[in-house]
Amino acid sequence: MEINNVKFNESIERAAEEQEKTNIKDDSSIPFISMKKENIILFKDSIKKVGDDYIFLFDIDDTIYKSSEKFHQNQIKSFYEAYDKLREKAIKDGKTIPPVDVALKENALYTETFFKYFDITPIQLEAFREQCDYSEFLEKDEEVRNMLLSIPFRKWAFTNGLKSRADPILEVLGLKDCFEGVICFDDDSREIIGKPKDSAFEFVEELLGIENKQKVFFFDDALINIKTGERFGWRSIHVRKEDCIIELVNDVLKDIKY
Image (cartoon, rainbow, N blue to C red; front, side, top):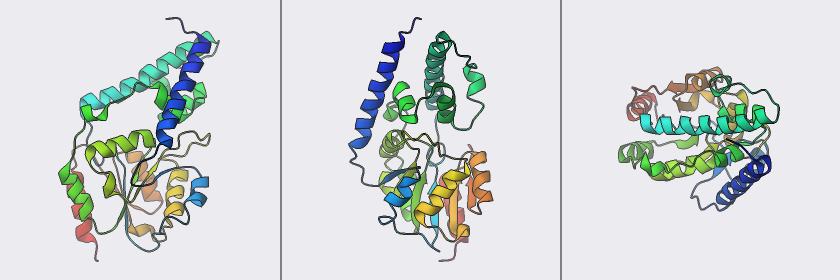
């Protein structure tokens, strides 16, 4: 397949511009705060500090909902196809780029791999990938919603997804208003901050003004993220495939004296 470089670059830029317009048109009822350092200053007066209080932090994908195999394959396929197209162009330009199976295993953050080899930002990657109608794979979950609403402490989502992904997923699940806000991946930052990097956990602590790390309950399906949380002193709960998030949260609540 021949790729016209000019048209190829223009198509990525146009797609990213359209994605950015979608992000700017923000009708969310809760804040989506991307992980870039300037946002700590930007939001310092609008977010009540956690201090010595309890706080529950939830990853989204495969944590507050379970991906079906069909949905999982759909998402992986979109990354692989995007990588192959970009690699084809790069090879034509004389660059040496490893195959997708090799490259995507190098880093826990796919976006960092794409930036390393193709110099494209997260929002450009998201725009370039095949777009997904999440309602085809997900539906409202009243049981998880009721569980989240029953937690008598502050709750934030903490995801490596962009707002353009996290927002519609939470909307389809009927869970968006269960959270005070969402800490998410930045669209266009050249400094990539995301789990499991220390910088992502430092961002959360500073943004939310966390003083007592033993009162942070962090739920995530990725063991590598859990290990960082544990190293930071957070009470980190690994959500495995066979686990029920409702049961895990209820077990935690039983142990809290309040």
